[in-house]
Amino acid sequence: MQSPIRAVVFDAYGTLFDVHSVGALAEQLFPGKGEAITKLWRERQIDYTRLRTLSNRYAPFDEVTRDALRWTADALGVALSADVEQKLMQQYAKLAAHADAPAALQALKDKGMRLAILTNGTSAMLDALIDHAGMSGTFERVLSVETVRQYKTSAAAYQLGPDALGLPAKEMLFVSSNAWDACGATWFGYTTIWINRSGLPLERLGVEPDATGTSLQDVVRFVEART
Image (cartoon, rainbow, N blue to C red; front, side):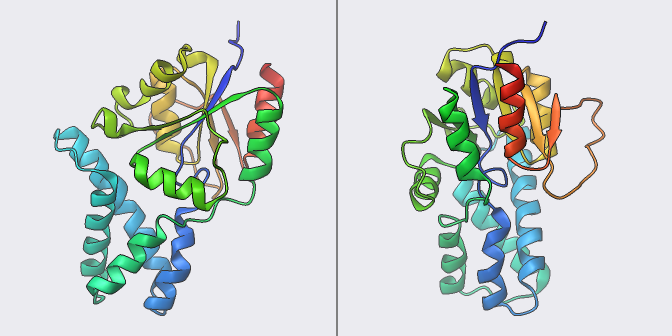
C-alpha cells in the first residue's frame, strides 16, 4: 500500500533555484566562457562536497563553492581577481528561481502540504536566496546539512527531514532536479520524484526514483494522486 504524502521536501540548488543563472554574469565577465565556467564550477562544487564527506573533512558550502570557483578559473586559464571572485560569489545569493517554482509552491500550499527545503547550502546562503526570490514564509523548515556536517547523499543529511517534520521519510515527497540526489533520497527511504529538466539519462546506480517529471508542476500532479 502506498503511503500518503504529508509533506514535500525540496532540494534547493538546481531544483528551486537555477544554478546556471549565474552564467549571465560569468559571460559578462569572461566573454565566450560563461557557459563553460558555470558548468565546470557546478561539477567541481558537487565533487568537493562528496570528497569532503567521504573523508570527514567538512567545510561550509560557501567555502566549498569558492574553492570550486578558484579551481575552475585555474582549469580554464582565466584571471580571477578578488573583485571578480566576489561578484560571482555574491551572485550565488541572487540565483533566479526557476519559472515554474512560485506557482507550484503555491499550489502545494493550497493543498495543505507542509513544505521544507533540505539543502547542502548554509542557512545564511538559503536565507539570502529565499528573500531574494520573494519566498519568505513559504517553507515550514529550511534544513541545512551544516548541522550534521555531512553533505548529501549521506544518511545523516537526509535524516534531517524526518527529524524536523516528525514524519516517516516515506510520507514525505523528496524533490530534486539532480538525479544522484533523487537516487540517494530513494535509498534513504523517501518517496521521491526526479525533475529531469535537461533530458538526462537516469544514473546507473541500481535504484530509481518513484517518479520522474520535467517541471515542478509534475510534483503537484504527483501529490494530487497521493493525497
